[in-house]
Length: 159
Image 1 (cartoon, rainbow, N blue to C red):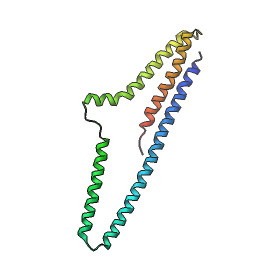
Image 2: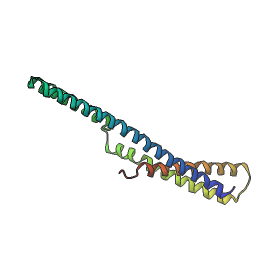
Image 3: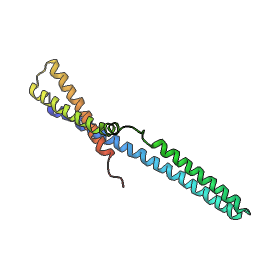
Image 4: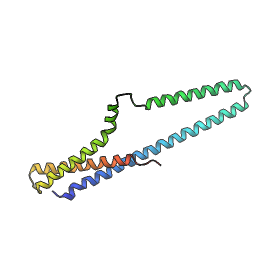
């Protein structure tokens, strides 16, 4: 088995992880565009409401309407915040959740190192078990590189 062939799985994995991060950023940009469109519509609606308020004869009715809008807006905001809030749980549960990705990435790289040593020690033997180990090494190399590229690509500094 060729060492270059084994490591090529890692290179492809890194590229796939980077592509996954780029796709994640692309989706984020699309979401931002939609949020901006929604905000522009809200601003246009507020301007229309203000124009209507200026022409309105009854200031009390306008204030009541505006109060209802603001209360509705805050009710929607509170509902959105509540939906995004993580479940209340024990501290250790939150710690396990936050450590899952880094621990899995580390374990993949440890598994890659162990498998690499096994392949290196086999000396290119062509029996079936050596071929299975070499194939596993290629798959683990791909997975480890993908996980690492995704991990750092997903946590890039935000502008």
